[in-house]
Image (cartoon, rainbow, N blue to C red; front, side, top):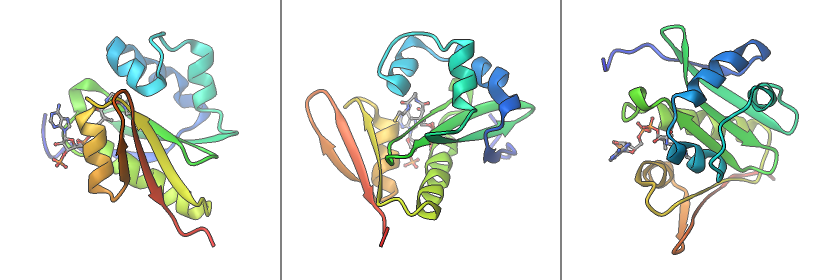
Length: 150
Ligand code: COA
């Protein structure tokens, strides 16, 4: 994978649902579990719901005509993301989380948070790098970043 890869980060649009479905079809069952805390495959309706907004804001990472990453921030400050397996470890996940934090600040949210499993090193690493307080339990890790909402 070239380090010179051009990646564009933008808000998800209605037309993106098919490419988001392709992204999710590239994921392992474990990846899906980490994203949704369940093992099922994304349906067409769920892909359309991701791009529809409402109670959430979704950002996509786009490169070479494909959507290679997706991150969603919910109104309560919780967020989750995935990066295509072929495009990991080059900073895309970190960048998506930074963009979601920017959006949360714009929306004057008081904090952002994520839940993951204790063996999800990359996600915990992202949280630690970006200043999240990490609470580790036996079966779950919780990351919280307080924002200035006053
Ligand atoms: N082994 C060791 N370190 C790894 C790693 C691996 N397999 N994958 C990533 N890292 C490290 C990176 O080196 C980086 O650390 P650094 O900044 O100190 O170098 C950090 O983890 C983050 O890497 P980054 O490239 O920004 O993230 P990514 O684009 O690989 O995406 C995830 C990270 C978590 C989004 C991606 O692994 C993924 O989609 N996982 C499945 C879904 C998931 O877990 N989502 C999170 C739900 S909250």
